[in-house]
Image 1 (tube, one colour):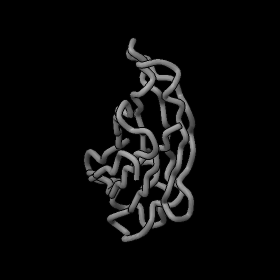
Image 2 (cartoon, helix red, strand yellow):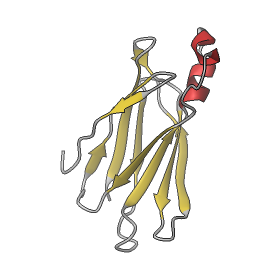
Image 3 (cartoon, one colour):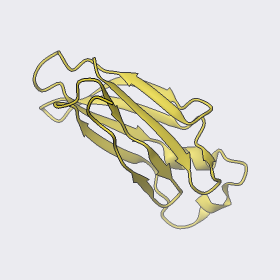
Length: 123
C-alpha cells in the first residue's frame, strides 16, 4: 500500500511545523470526502499515512488539509495572524494512480502563503 508523507516547515520562524493538524481524506468519484485520518505532525514536522488504493480504480485520489491558520494562531509570536486575509488552510490534492510505494509532499508554510513540491514514484 502506498504511503503519503510530508515534512512541513514553518518559513516564518525557520523551524519544523511541529504539531500542525493535518486531515487526509479519500476523494470519491461523487465528490464526497471519506476521512482516512486526522493527525498532528510530529516534533520534526513530519507526517506519514499509509493508504489503501486497492479498493477500486477510483480509490487513488486523496486530499491533504494542513490547518495553517490554526497552527500560527497557537504560536507564542502570533501577531502576524491578525493582519488581513491569512490563509486558513493549505489544501493539496493527490492522484496516486501511478504511485506504488511513496508520495512525499514537502511543504513550507506562512500565514499568507504556502509552497510545496512533491517526490512521487518508488523512492
